[in-house]
Length: 494
Length: 75
Image 1: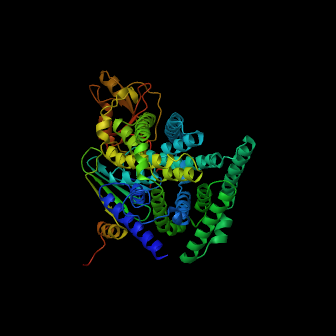
Image 2: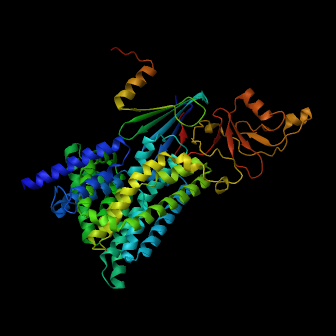
């Protein structure tokens, strides 16, 4: 018992200290924890702090459960669901590209069908934690593409839930097709039941569980989550998805904020133990044998991410810089890939799965922050025609949604097709612009008399719209940028 | 109150407020993160790269805010 406590304490302390050093250099924390597990585990020569990784099994699964519970609780459903079709298309393309590339690679490796499905998920779903921290550290919170990136990773989280539900019966592998279908139905039935609870039972749950004291609320929550996760595992759905779904239920109640804060430190500690414990199962000698597949996987992920980034930028009318920012920020893989690898190990799949995902996560953990911070160099290689062909782009400039005059966009259409001032003065014009405040139509800045700008200077109406057929852009004179619609529930205070 | 302040949700992070100072070379955005950290983004050139970014704790933000609103501070 003494030895156990000493080993656990030492390894958690080391994980924390190493992650602290890593953070100074912008290195994500999750791979640090895993690395410490690998280095001080039984599979690596040198000091061994924990001889039997299975001793940590219960603590580690608590980490897994709390990780997914917290994901469910903080899920910003309203913000994302209300943000329009384009975001879902962008996220759908990102997920489809990455998951299908992962699936193809998984089958190409020839380790088996279940293995291919796990690899598809591990390669396809990016790490929310890494992407969010990157955006904060690279000072990109006001960039135009940032809300899109955040929206995409939230939809990816949602996709993870469905993917886990699909994967659980596959990994159970009951043999016959009929059993498999039953497993699949039970799995989705459980999901639907918890969805229904989230939709209609939130108030009752809040009444049942609420108490004013934080101490008791924390205890009740942890008990509830672990129980639901356990029941989920018992009926053949993974504990991960049970925890995620009960998190979604709690997120619909009035307890959301308090539970989020109370569970956060618990989650961080036990999730770290989960990642360390995953590392413990990895034999460092095995990492060499999967080096080639990992190298291929990293290249494939890089390619699919950049492709998805360019597609998203095209969809939203962003420039090259934004395209590469999107592709490279969501490059990081972490917690979700490791969760899928853990499920694969628990189901007794090919033993190369653990080392493969471990090395893949490590490589991308180093690559993602480096590449994301250098995105302007990649932006130079993206030709204009991949984006919106009629637009001219400033390739490596950051874009922002800085225009705050969108409340003054009142007139969007007009029948006028001449610049009246030019007609009065007997002049000609090149293109026409519509003042969105008052509806005045005047000539553009390429025209000799620039009546549109003169109108702005006289009346201070900020935004004009092009009346050129096929052009759908607006320009703000005050902020001197093209105006783009903000994502989600944006509004002007007043 | 609130005229010229534009709010945008950042899913999973918090809310972003753009404050209109009426000039393209003077722009300020504040990101209020969950967990009460506030990021102050200051833009003084026409480009979109921030000139300065300050990560303020709740206390720091309150102190700054109080001085900006003209509340007197001793010590």
